[in-house]
Length: 209
Figure 1: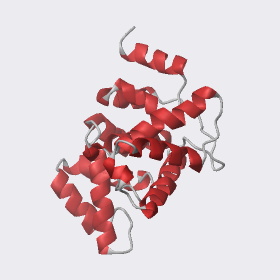
Figure 2 (figure 1 turned 135 degrees about the horizontal axis):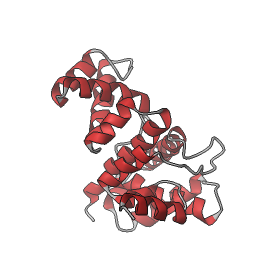
Figure 3 (figure 1 turned 90 degrees about the vertical axis):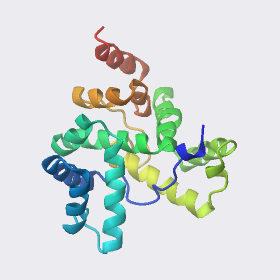
């Protein structure tokens, strides 16, 4: 897998759910990404203190929304709080392969194994294993790893997948959220803390079984 799949630019900002809701609404109303981005920056929809931060965060929100199918963008703008949390976790996983793999191989594994506690050490172990073959991780500064670890846990909490005491929280995604996930790849359901039976049921429903 090329290192480009392991982007490491999610060092700050968390899930950006509220920011994405505001941006997605404008994107749908204007129907043009360039015009929507201009308005989002002009009106500071992402609620940043400086122009530079507004531009940077707006760009990040648009990049995550761009990873979603059109139904996903619509659900971010119009869905429930839980829907938007879950779809924005999906968007983060689509944008960042590291999060997708961490969700599947560590977060979900913690839930299905019955050991729900997710520790910082679990992140570090996963990082070190991946770094053995991904140059981007092996060459990253220690400060970058720490920031990414902090922001990963923040994103999981904001997505409703992790408690404040670092316990993995199971979810029951809505049918519309499942439709958005499977419109990208059914496999991405495994980046959420759902058990094997639930994953099989959701897959069967989507396959019309």
